[in-house]
Length: 294
Image 1: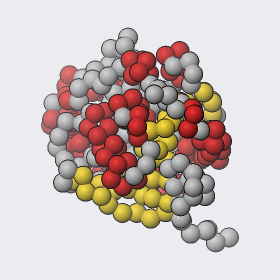
Image 2 (image 1 turned 180 degrees about the vertical axis):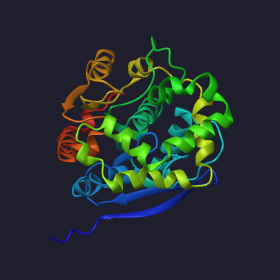
Image 3 (image 1 turned 90 degrees about the vertical axis):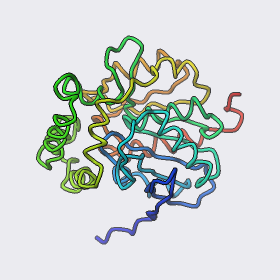
């Protein structure tokens, strides 16, 4: 069977002098949807979601600065940096408030955007969202993903470069994905290549090294206490990193959230796209102007 052509187009936007890659699709009348990838991923990770969502909404997926096909400068990376990137993208490219959806690290960036600039985010969707809680001892949002390897010895620049060369191997990428995907058949050669390719870009090693010097982000429970928008949690319950108990902590901090557990791992949008797409579309159809809080 011949695969239907993609509805999306790939292009670039210049932000603060840096080339930023994004994908856009759809011309429907629904509220625009902005998709934000996780650590080490890119717009490619939404390949199973964009076209389906684009039948109902204008859809945008963006590569955060430092990832994917976007530029990779040697700078300090924070949730506030990406918040500003996303805010300016909404203002300059989309030109309208969005439903913002983020996986893992992208979820943390989406949360910061929605709290600090609710005028650009009408609703927030977190898929196994990252970020520190107040009682967490992890020094940064990145280190929740990389754990104790980020401490001491590996905090040195030469050591982080060595670690980067190890983690960027295709075989290591595959093994890591198989640990956090429930359905191992979803870990395809294409998925491995999509994650490997950006690691070959100039500056990729410097971005990886910056992980170890990243300041701790604002606590998730504090941010949720300031949230004034509807929140949908789509959570892969087999995720060994961002567990189901963590999802329940989001609900404890924001009781108005809707939580849907999915039989998947860390990236439910890639493992079970049919469920994620349906939940997102059904939920977005319920978002009306009168649900918006001041």
